[in-house]
Image (cartoon, rainbow, N blue to C red; front, side, top):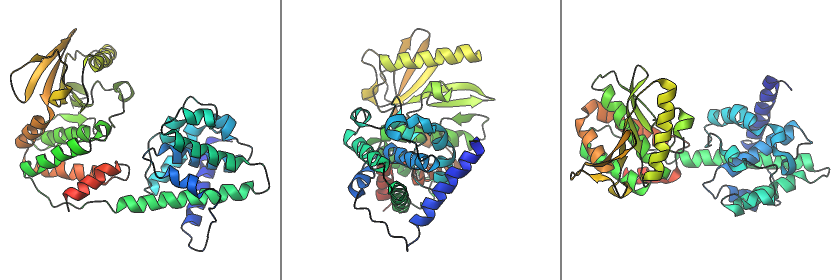
Length: 365
């Protein structure tokens, strides 16, 4: 069917599930699948519940669709990253950018072979069990699809409410010591696969430049740490730019930034230089002392720890905590308050890691 018609149908299916899920007069008997469905919400791997939502929508679109043998027959990327994700955003439901595609890539169908290759495998097995339950060829198939769709939507709505209760309202402050302590605790206790320090660094640089009224813009605050330089088409995690020309490249990490990562970085920068006619030859690596390569040339200083030259690019290693404190000290009062607001808004976002939210909530209790 035409794309616009398909997207409208997907939205209508989701709205029907939502309307039924919020109707207190509609009671669903979940005995056949409650345990399996509950396990999809007991894991931080959201992609499993999202792929189930894709399957349910696809089965409503086409009753002959079988996710167990032909998942990609329903064009899962198109329907998830289009109308499904738009619906989740509109309803403020926690989701990942490409969650279901990440857990289902390189597979023909959602079966035991697929489940064994996923992590955690026992959760993927619950998806397989639910798919098999839905695909049972009898007269109750439509009822099963609708019931499970409503039950899944109820849990998604409950997640929105539960996560929303962790939101924090902050008192405006420009105290650099207080803000440093928050940054330190977040980075040490809830790095969130590198997302936390990357967001902090991007927000610091952005508001430093904005409130000294420089012409420099900062990119990288919208990316997750899992986004590669190739995907983002930028040579670093965070970049300082002017008139779309990159002036400085930052790699922000709380993992070892050794020769393997240096090579990856070098390859990305080389491609960027070739494609854009630029000459980037320096990278600032903001990390912990233990993340530096063993054969780095030490500086003998505390903040700037040393450098490592790889071919024609020099990597300068800065202590992430010293760098936080230094940047906060150099910011204006207005810049620090804006940074605090940006950080709070990010942590309050529905898709930010719950572990980060819980620590932030505790730090403000």
